[in-house]
Length: 558
Image (cartoon, rainbow, N blue to C red; front, side):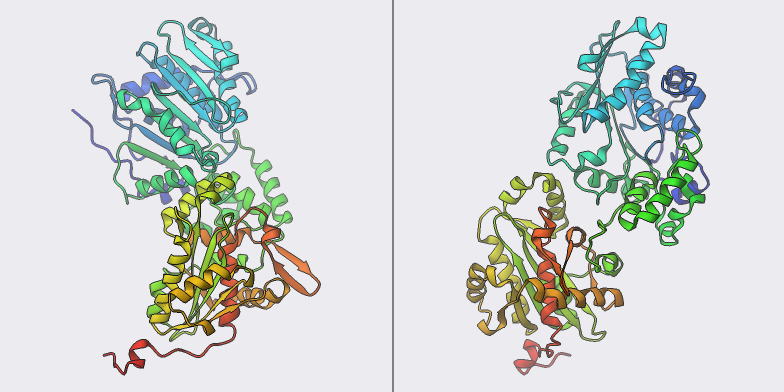
């Protein structure tokens, strides 16, 4: 009889604090789990004092995870009922050694002739971190040495009886050929999230599972040192949704060692008493004194260093980068993303709207920002959008995956034809003008040409289109935006693209002025932020509220 189970873990917040298992079900096939766990437990860790077996040093969280993988296999039907596994865990918790042990167990338990198992890593260094423990597990055991042939130059381990192989592949050096792979383990998924072709690469690596009913994929990762992007962001969000019961997928098992939102709000993630939450190996492979010392170092070094520590050692997701030369407004940006804000929100709820525009070159984003003053609260509501040509993705390949994310979020439009971006922007301004709410449109004077023509074509009055002086003259807007954010007088919709732009902004002191320039930010894009500052310049002039188009026409709303 087929067992019933759920991979959702709605009480994970209680479990993780109580140090209980995050796997919400027992092994579906206990005998398979037991037999495989015996193989896993007999493997030796050469780099640990005394070369202990994995069974001697592995804690329950490891054996539970291993049992869930192999205990999902139905030996009678040859089918695995849970096929995808995702574990998010902090650094130094024995992830690479566990990965080697899992794949060596899979290779040993495999019955398919000439089968292939694959460990896919983002770099050669990380690939070696998985290959060397597996190699040493074979070399230290006479029985395994007779059973397996290790080929170090190709990073493969071959079963002499079945001709099945375990291959370790670095994505930055080898072609992924795993079309017939039975089992695939993908290590440090967060780094794949920074690669524009990662999704296709993983799809290629796991393509063989379509004809391998016993097949499986394991994703292992620490948290990203920058805001999550690409395939990592997608998989992490999916894992959270399955864990929380928002998505029902009993073939996908998420095991996420991360702090709850409540704990982060209460600053418990900065309390050493709770370091165990994301470090289930604390006191074993993770030294408590080392963590505490590194925490103090990061604390003394500043918020940028602290965020790096929290991301890698405590799995705290980074919302935006806070550099030492950051814009002061960045410190308040995240907490002001308090509600859903759209262009429709501004038109429906504001009494007047100012627009800022920046960028638009083939190497830039075209940034659009609208700030509206709320009819009742007088708060400033901010909304942004951007456009990018395909050339931007080609010239900034390191950010291509992130741009795809922003496009999926609806915050960035990837245009295929030059001119579509300006046309769409003009259409947005026209909507505001038709609603009777447009005060002014502010642009960098150097970029007015084509944009002005498009605005004129959209019948935006010429006297409403003005140039905003850049450089030191932007100091007032920069300071105003900082103060409005700090006071809670400017709110926004928490758009990931804008958080990224804000995190990219670098402040350059110049005499008595504070400058934010594209030159200082380098290849990192800030065009939507510069557009926002242009809009701030205009709204700071306290424009008079505009009568609605309905009032102008003598109509009364009821």
